[in-house]
Image (cartoon, rainbow, N blue to C red; front, side, top):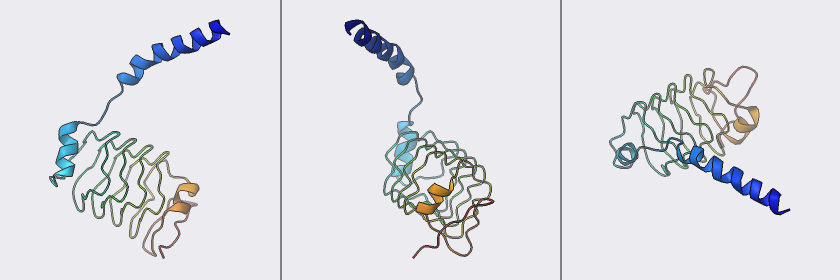
Length: 152
């Protein structure tokens, strides 16, 4: 029993440096988003708290939002081409009319996320289960074989 516990703890200790080496949000780039200076191409925003911020109509193409908190974020009409939203919490975010070509949504929380007027056909990592929690309108274009509920 003690040997098993030791091995488990040793495994955690060995894994810790790998976790510490993972990339994180760039504090200066996060500050730019919070400060309203929001064109931020290829920004490193991984794990950042961006809740209730607004980047409406700006260019964030190629940005890394992985694991970020983007709840209630105003993201409409913005360019997120090639951005990564893997594991990002986008609950209540407004992505209406956003450019999401090549954006990756694998594991993202899309609870009450608005995709009104948005073309999702080139987005990656989306599942029907994710889209069932989001909403759009008659102009929303879902990936092949999927549908987006209409916002009420």
